[in-house]
Length: 118
Image (cartoon, rainbow, N blue to C red; front, side, top):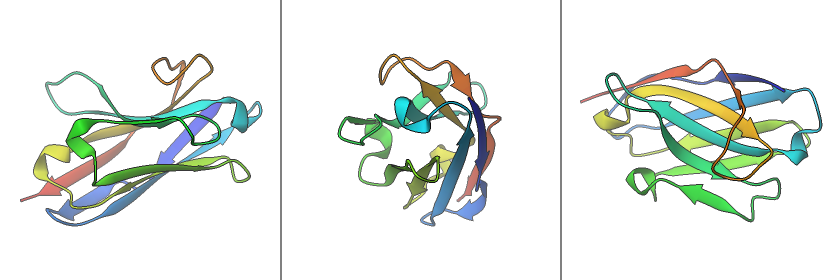
């Protein structure tokens, strides 16, 4: 599967951004999908994830109530709506796909930069 992320940019603290990831390849609905992020000098961390039906989801404590992950299995996309952004949300955001569960991912997009200014 190939993943193409888009939607990053520069935003002021308190603002919003919507990231989108388009997938191509084998049937999209088979995949668990997730967004990760990696800030400079820090390890990559999972931000949010969901299964094919969006009945099983996972959201990092640091973004709960502010970020929402969603998917459209007809359009083969997974989005991350980010609100009330904080400077500490600044990172490169990656979408990922996997077949083994919410915690394991094998395919990665190229990353999109999100910068939140104070």
